[in-house]
Image 1 (cartoon, rainbow, N blue to C red):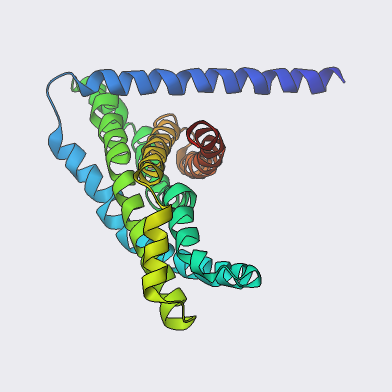
Image 2: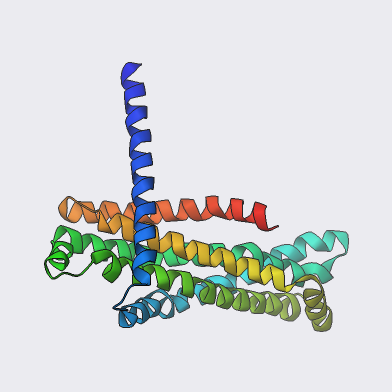
Length: 256
């Protein structure tokens, strides 16, 4: 019993210490963002990596998600004679929840793991230590551009996910299931407001912060050679996905 409580206490202590280190890294990254010299080239490079290179997986995920939502929504709403609500169901689901969440999860798997692996490799090969010897702050040079890229590009990717999701839902609902196109579009416009889209984009920005911060932290503090880099990448993906889902609940409870 004593050993159990000792392990529990060590786990709690580790969680508190890790949380504190993550918060410190976040404040450092924000602080260095406003200090010259400004590394715009690094920021644009990370924005291209996080945003442009994630377009394919985001478009693919969003379009098929919208198509599945339309098909399932039609089958459910048809029982109540409410087939005209398929459009609003797809649009609201994509704008409020599925667009931001799926975008965050996809970017975590594609870009978050790569960030943790890259920084972890730099840590175990002592490249980060070499930055100190060259009077370059590693947090400003490596972490800040990634956080900026995540916060800026995740909302853009979420907009694309929402758009292709609605298009996919329209294709299935109108072309395959025979819903009147005027009714589909009109109902969607009636039920979806600007606030729904804005709240979804706000969620996406938060998710972008979570992904880049957690991935950068795990890679930055990696140790133990190649095995440690693998652990860092795995921890970054798992922890980011869990935090996205947990934060989504709290954000939803606050916004809606």
